[in-house]
Image: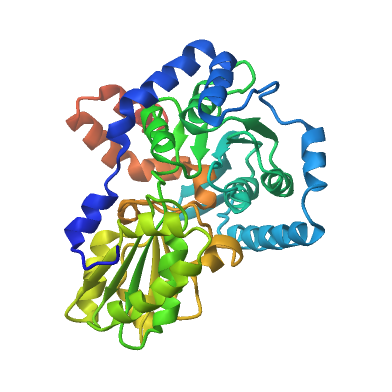
Length: 419
């Protein structure tokens, strides 16, 4: 339950468990590689307890889903979609930029969207229409030609409506490691994609890591987690609500409070206990809290240093001067500043992306954004004068490396000197 922990405890607790399921994931991947659609159907029966007559979702099924979702809910999905699109449009780079850095030497970058990407949407304990919006809309903003979605059957009608609003091209009824294998390797029904994005359990993450030689991925994105930085000015009720909100995702989720106020953890726990008792998902919350706890730091600078070492998926800053603290933060998948910025705002409505690196990967990875769906090519455009200005450097270095043909590729372009 709620307890004081060390930084090492947190890191060890959040370490990837992918290695523990490697054999199972490899078996699933090989099954899909060899048997295609047959494997998808067999695994749906085994893991999801459904008989698939069709692996692909039809337009009729999508239309039928609208009949099961209230118009008010559709309106709010569309509002969320608008906010997500607006924020991700701000991230769009120029399609091409060129700059003359010296006479005759023009350099630049050309940004090009990927052609076909796959979005993995978890199922099982809950439906995640918000994750549909978060993965598909940035791909659409980036200009991806074909966006594919895989999610376990039976698919919640709300998930299908969200997929339609977001603009998915193809939807398939498959989840887990088999869905990743299908999108990476292809089956009779599912053509392979160039890149797979989206969160998932340890089996999904394991398959993504295992198939990186076949398909690009976004980053490891496992069970949800939150780190909260708080001082004596923080409102315990707000802290309790945020810590519980992440814990209700999954029994493997985790919540961490790092504070310089030694009285704050007990004040917060007192409120958490009351909230948990009334929570519909209290069983999941209590299991997640076994992975959770608090750390008391000597001062806020040390608290920030500890949190930078942890690099949480979600980072909430609830201190007297949150913007000053923000300036000292180096690692956090998505950062929520101030007492009135719950993580739920980023999960659903503000427009920032909630598909984020977990288990310390925020130290090196960025959360899902438009750039994940694009590639860049450097561009150089030289005149003869520009090449002449670089010729000495090229020839000297190429000769030093013993690559004489490189020298010749420059010399043949130079005008012959008058005798």
